Image 1 (cartoon, rainbow, N blue to C red):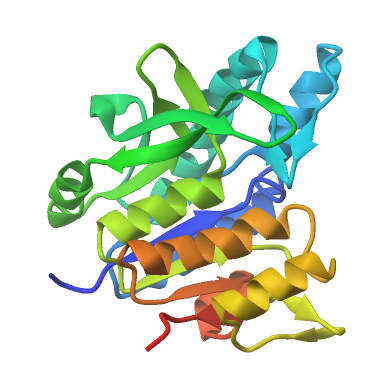
Image 2: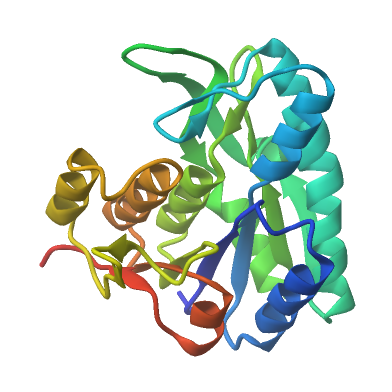
Length: 250
C-alpha cells in the first residue's frame, strides 16, 4: 500500500478563518494522500451553553447526554464539517465531507467509565477501511466528523480516538494529531518522543492532564492498531516536521 497519512485537526481553532486557510494550504501541499478527521469541541460547548447545557467531561472526554447529542450531530455533521471541507476545496483539495454514520464507516458502542455515565459518548469498534481507500484511490480526501454508528443510537466519539482507529485500520504511515501547542510539554519543554510507559507515568503525576490525556492515549492506540508512527504537533509541525513522536516499542 502506498504511503497514507491521517490528520486530526482540533476544533479549538476551526472558527478562525486564517488558521483554517493555513491548514487547508498545508494539506494541499502534502505529497502524500491524506484522510482528515476533525473535532469541534469549542463550537459544541458554545451551542450547549446557548441552550443552557453545562459541558461536562471525564478524563478530558465530553460526556454526551441526550440533549447534547442533538447539539453534537448538528455542529459536527453540519457546521464544522462544511466549514472544513469548504476551506480545503478552496485550497484545491478534492475534499468530501462525511461522518462515521455514512455507509457505516465507523461503528461504535457506549464508552464505559468507572465513575461517570458517559451517555451517548462512544468508543470505536470497527472502521470500514475499504470505503476510505476507495475514495483515496480516486484522489478524494475524506473529511470525517466523529459521529459514529451504534446498534441503537449514534454516538459522539472523541475525534482523537476516531483518528487513531482510522489510522490503525488504514495502516497509516503517520497519524498527525494537530494541537494548539507544538507537542507534549514535559517540564516546560517539548518532549521529542514518548513511550507508553512514560505517558502513563506523566498522566499519574499530573504533567499530562485534561484534553491532552485522550490525545496521547490515542497516539499510542494508533500504533497498537497498526499505524507506523503518531505525532502530536501544531500546524508548523505538520508543515515542517517536529512535535512529539510516538513509535512502536521494538
